[in-house]
Image 1 (cartoon, protein in one colour):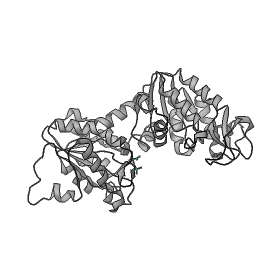
Image 2 (cartoon, protein in one colour):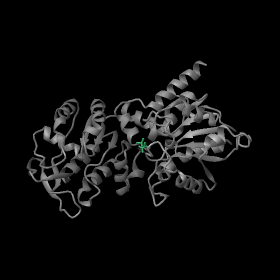
Image 3 (cartoon, helix red, strand yellow):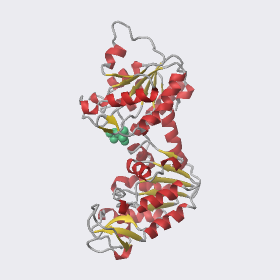
Image 4 (cartoon, protein in one colour):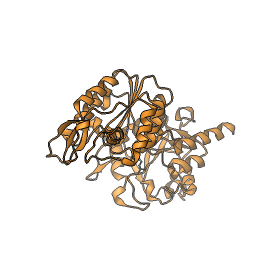
Amino acid sequence: MLTLESVDIAGKRVVIRVDLNVPLADGQVANDERIRATLPTIQYCLDREAEVVLVSHLGRPQSRVDPRFSLQPVSQHLSQLFERKVRLVVDWQDEFLNDPSNENEGVVSGRISLIENIRFDPREEQNDSSLGSELARVGDIYVMDAFGTAHRAHASTSAAIQCASLACAGPLLAQELESLERVMLDPKRPLIAVVGGAKISGKLEALVRLSEVADTILVGGGMANTFLLAKGNPVGRSLVEEDLTDMAVSIMERTDVPLPIDAMTCTEIAIEKVATLRSVNEVRDTDTISDIGPRTARDYAARLQHAQTIVWNGPMGVFEFDQFGEGTRVVGEAIATSSAYTLAGGGDTIAAMENYGLKRSMSYVSTGGGAFLAVLEGKELPSVRALKVHSHQHSQA
Ligand code: 3PG
């Protein structure tokens, strides 16, 4: 893939597809990690006297203009971070493509514009090449840097790359892919995958792929219940996917999956409920397993000490409730303090790391949720495919 570093952007207008899909609260950005992750790419372009036009989506506005999903708060936040105005451009085609006065035709070095939520245009999610072509024509170079949205074949993440005369991968996208390749393609061994979360079904393909590459998979969260049931353990009223027990068995046959020994249970998930510790073979009919137990957490932590590479996706329990957060905290701390290469990703995993102050200690934290999982599943991301085809055509030209 062509990368931003390999193309000449000096004095050019650079269109960058970024992922500024951040949570808002009271009309303000509630968490700016994703915005901050894009800053080095934007700064790189500004340092080369380029003009920057940013493209992003925010939320899922159902293909129509909806003020609740305006990028206005994000443009304000970017303005504060850069200490210069970041303009929100609503009628971007008028401004960049059909301006009869030609006033805005020339490149304005150092200017940063943010195009209003690209999902307001119904053509975006249809991967419509007319929108792709319009986006590509806004600038001289189209940079795909939105790793978090690279698993969507949309006009701004796929068609625009195909339509651009010059398109390349941005540094964030490249860095994310490198981190995942380091784990999935050429890991230092042992590679331990820590996989949690509510259900196996949402992570089935990732588990199957990980069972092919990881030396050990440590399971937690609701999905561990299906593994426990497959081994004949009682799971009471816990979340469980009985139709996937065969799949759990085949994953256990392919790689080492040491199961939980004990669990924190309750009779109903509610803040006021007291957690009861049980051995996994003593879970009662009325129990709901809500976290791994302390012996399991210690066992997992001890195993993690021997890892050279660790990938983590999904909490070990319902950590939103303190009494069911210890498993995630102990395992998360074992990952964070390990000398292994550690890669973590996914919305819940990031929330858990923030909760326990673990983020800064990881080797790499992905900005992707669905995109991170898609790579763990072994899928080629549509944006990456489009960039590879574009780069190939470019090298032949
Ligand atoms: C994300 O938050 O995972 C990305 O921004 C993609 O958003 P989407 O799931 O609405 O496509």
